[in-house]
Amino acid sequence: MNSLFPLPDNPADALFNGISFCQIGAYPGAQVYLDHCLVQEPDNIRARYYLGVTQFRLCQYGAAVRTLNHLARMEDAEARLAAQMLRRTFALAEGSPMFDVQILHEDVIHAICDDPEPSVLEPEFFARIVWQQPGRLRSFPNTTFELSIVLGPKHHWLCTVPPSQSLQMRKSTLPYIPSWSCSAKVFDRVGAAMLFFQRALYDGREAMARFFTPQICQTTFPKAHEEILLRRVFPEPFRIPLSPIGGLYPIRMAQMRRMIIRTPAEFLGEKTE
Image (cartoon, rainbow, N blue to C red; front, top):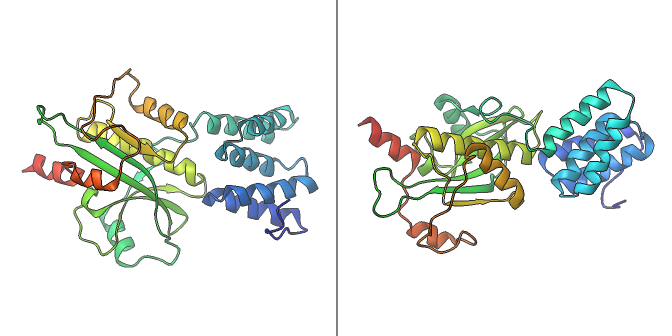
């Protein structure tokens, strides 16, 4: 047990701390508290469920499967429901990007940008998506999304993009514009980021007629998880064309700046003229 974390005597306090750490994405701390709770209450279903989520996020897949099997063997309806929810998490299907992710209205964006609450922290980058057009095909401009996640007001995750990439045309003193929201009471940080990633793919595909897989895709997810999420939106087999800036990994910011990138806002503005 990690002595750096204060471990409460009351298992309910340990459970509360473990769930809180899990939801904000502090998974090592969550694991310490949840393990401590289960030492005192081995049949605590909520603790074991969140421990399974935590183990999966930490890529401890063998331990996560054992936690799932433990819940599935318990003679309890709540445990069976928890096992079912864990299976959805393990399948990267714990939510719907078109239902659980909401586009923020312009008035909400203005309120957050003009008077951010103290609970709004610094956004954490998690994905870059680029649709590139070959030089001879300029019927559609190049488009990019650089996605970050932040815990915003009223227990909501916010997905943010740079002001130049926002679908809402707005000048802001902030280095980012909130674009989508997702409940922080239901989804942990990584789960919400995965939903935001899929939503950006869907919006890029539908709103800008991007019916082919983006040529550049960088995420903080495990590579296998990234591939699964991409296939949800672009199920057809694809071959990524050669990029003028070399391989997909790594891409330096200086190289990105030299690319001719057209933002979603610019593209939509052109379409309405």
